[in-house]
Length: 115
Image 1: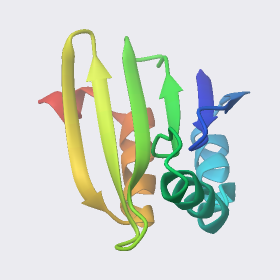
Image 2: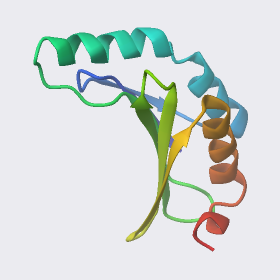
Image 3: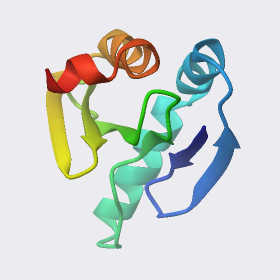
Image 4: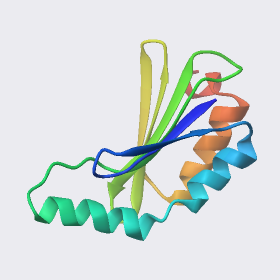
């Protein structure tokens, strides 16, 4: 599976994800305070920025994609968006541990998200 880490300045890092453990490790290794600081600096300077995040495309269970992104640094929340073909489902107001649960869902039974 292909994955990426999206930074607030629109740069990204591509990574290959071969397992659930690897996907969780990448999420857990993201330096959220540093990413938040970059996002807030860009915003305060009036520069273009995007919420930083983490995405995964592809699945052995079908054409799914997963994207977690920073919703609110102040509340320490994230949003997660799942896509399958032309369907999408977004969950908002999630804590980091809930993002991890969504990563597990993506790997184990992504169809249940749309069920």
